[in-house]
Length: 281
Image (tube, rainbow, N blue to C red):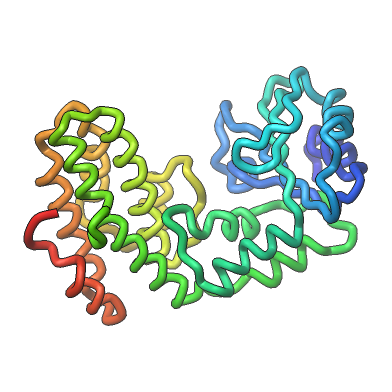
């Protein structure tokens, strides 16, 4: 670790009570950072979450601004480093985190979206403090081939959400367009794209890299994609301005997904039951 900022961060954060490991993740590890990229630092602990006041004291000398104790997604401290670069410090109970990853990787539980993001985050982290090797042991435990049962479960769940069950996203989105309900169009479009991308990463046996740069990540990492995917995604994002195009666009995307999936026998019953390209949404 040669980055002086990370050296000081690691020294400060590792001194907090209960901290077992510190890791860097995100774009600064994968090499796709830009001038706006922040530091994503993950602190793994046992016992109680380190006290907010102690965390703020540890971060204050390194930062011009510290918001300690934010908990909108995970337990976080969101900061601006003295050099102007944003810093997110995320705190994870190491046993609870391991259980969440195991639920996906070992128990093959699919989510509505971002199913394998925590797994991806773990595998693509750079460990900067781990004196007992606990985080390294987790990486070794979960550094396994993509489970086929997980892949099938994600694809089946995503298909049901996108086009299969009665409250599927496609029908909800089409109805919102018919009504001219702009806020609902935006909400359902986001949900549709989140679930669609979860399906596509899983189908290609790629762990989900997260919400940023999704289109470029899909095209770079996934050799098997629906025909015309980029145009379809752009069309979805234009629906607030062109709501009359919704049904044709969604049926076209449904057909291209069908063509992608029909080449694999384990999806044949799924396609017959709820994913036929003909007919209405």
